[in-house]
Image (cartoon, rainbow, N blue to C red; front, side, top):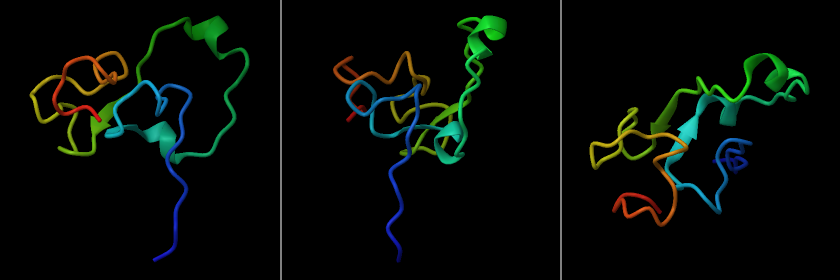
Length: 79
């Protein structure tokens, strides 16, 4: 089987977030529009999921997203 690059994202960083946190943008190669925040602000409509459950909730029943799945937050499922 071929080696695939690790998913990358400007919203999820390996140093700060759980290794199981994913979103679709991690699998799509694109360049962010520099004017994007001017129109959208800080509103985040990203759909996240956990690779342990393949759902929007982690194995502990809490939401899988960039705010909740932070390393060292006390969730037993975060790595």
